[in-house]
Image (tube, helix red, strand yellow):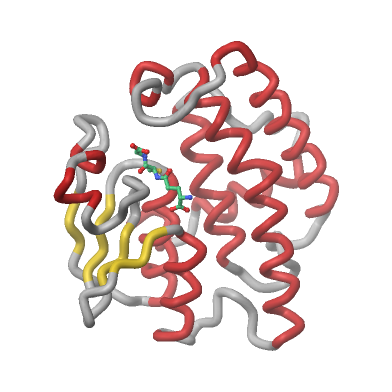
Length: 206
Ligand SMILES: N[C@@H](CCC(=O)N[C@@H](CS)C(=O)NCC(=O)O)C(=O)O
């Protein structure tokens, strides 16, 4: 197996996922700033033109972080990062989808519509007229999530899951592009983030 990685929160999620499992894979860095990921060589691996991509031993290429993490969980079941039972997996996937819809998607769209516009305007459709709306939607999503998290140690409850890694990855990215967490407004998430930042996997994948 080989991972095609780059800067950005989506490849970071997969690197975090691997680190938590103690799995080291060969990594090829792709320069998304110059747009190497939008050139024919990379498009042959992933016609979607995005990183990360996991090349399997049989040569097939898997894109999309959800598909990659689900595959890695099957190949390397321990420690379980999607949940240890059918019920826990259902809850993990529920929170995964919620964080994706309420934080990841609006934050990404807000970045592409504003700070990332120069980089993305010729790659994907961006919506500069509503950049602030996307950013407000992200803040609302985080506020809701803060209330749901309460005093729980992790987003899905007592155990670390892929959802914590996803959210960590995007909050760190957000902090670099003007969409950092408002700690005063989201004290539960701020406490959770402090704890996450102390994990070895997080420090080693920066
Ligand atoms: N839905 C995709 C999103 C992947 C994505 O947007 N990756 C970013 C890096 S974080 C990227 O490749 N950006 C460069 C580009 O789109 O040209 C996934 O889950 O993997």
